Length: 102
Image (cartoon, rainbow, N blue to C red; front, top):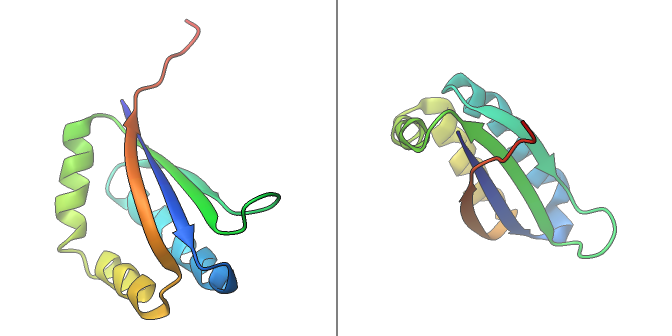
């Protein structure tokens, strides 16, 4: 199991656009076999940082999702939306493996 952690630097004046972007991606990740854990939007503190977390059964399945998303019309529309609205200034991606108590 691998969890992708995305840290976004967003335009705080385009929070509504970023929220829409997040709502587009949640079902898309799930369409390709992932489990989306949601987007986490600014509340207190920095107003330009947002996070997203989603899990795939393996890094190989995540890589398959990345490849398929490049050819999927809905995914391409979501990418274009972010580019057109410029709601995302930058992002970084990291991967984690969970540790459970049992």
